Length: 273
Image (tube, rainbow, N blue to C red; front, side, top):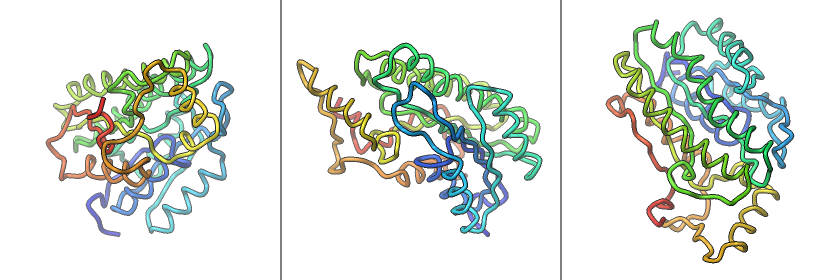
């Protein structure tokens, strides 16, 4: 199939459902082959169900139905060896790597100390592991590439509660901006671009679940001056495809001179802060 990404290979973490699945489907529709990685198991501090092996299998079918090829593996971004093995399986099949979408993330907002550790390990250290697993191949190919880190509006503003899991979420998402800016400088001479995307609320299982909805309600109820949680534009929540469209543009040649940018895709949420 021909498209703006034909001949390219994209590594996507957290690909079993939600935003990760949307990224896989969108990039496949543009012609890319996909290396899909997801834990597909539960983390104790996360109060809502995480993705399953069946979710990952469903992503595989959606990508293959488009006509693209996909290698899918269970892998833990917290465990660099596990992640590297999953990436290597894709490289063995496709022989190259051009695009990285570091999307895997959790939101243990009402959790205690375990939530802090887990969210830092997944949302920040896991992103570092993902980039490090990819860049040796991308550099050695000599053909450049694009890396997109999926952060959050909470990575550009002090959004959250006093719960350690919530503080850790904001800290990790802010830390991703630092990673992005450093890698953008380090990899520019190799024509590898690095940017981050910062969505407001997206309709995924991470947000659309009983526990996260309760946390948001408590955040408003417990505040002396309740925060305005709405977007500026008249939309309550974004669709995963909205973020995937922005990713597809960032990794395409249309954005070939864009690097080191923290891009809000937030319906004006941050403009109101």
